[in-house]
Image 1 (cartoon, rainbow, N blue to C red):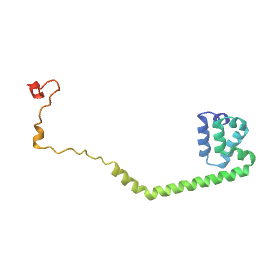
Image 2: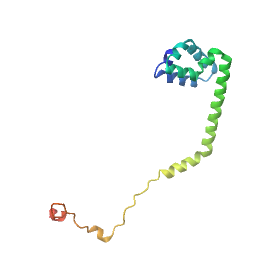
Image 3: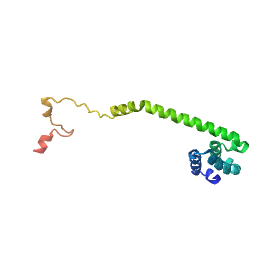
Length: 137
């Protein structure tokens, strides 16, 4: 995991995997491997971002503190997700009404035609005085 954590693209995978792991014990196994490659992680910007996200430094110093911090983060994330779910349930019907109103296509206003508009005078070109009617005949 250390080499993937220092990769330009792979560090995103490690972060996503870390957040997707459901159990703290599984996260601890991943972080334990990252602690073993601590020097390599700190020598790279991508590795440092993974170390910060997974709290590798706290795990290396005190595993109990790491577990407390992880449970605190999980409860915070769960509360946030519940709050978002509650908000979407409250305003779910209003959003669909607003969207349908905004998608309504408006017709372009065109000027009203008079009876005389059909008999428009023929346009002339700048060089000649002939109209289009004279050219067609």
